[in-house]
Image (cartoon, rainbow, N blue to C red; front, side, top):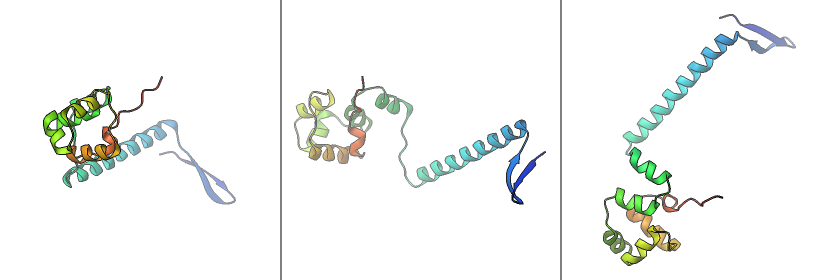
Length: 128
């Protein structure tokens, strides 16, 4: 590798490398970062971190009711979830259809029943 060192007050301050070499360095660094990230993910999975399929993620990202997506993912019916949370089936249905906003207390119960964070159930605000 052809490197030019520029010194300032007698100490190395900059290293100049040919652009092609720079691109190779950056490419290798990105590969190493990807390897590190993959190891972190694998370790989390090995420790029991839950993973989610593509369909689940797409449904969450493209405007479906987050509560409904989570409920169906956990294979619960409206009746099941309503019983667990101590509310009516109509209340769950209204929340899923955006006609009702759950209280914080109910949101906590829903999150616990669905084994997710409360934030996972909150629909993102629709920006203009």
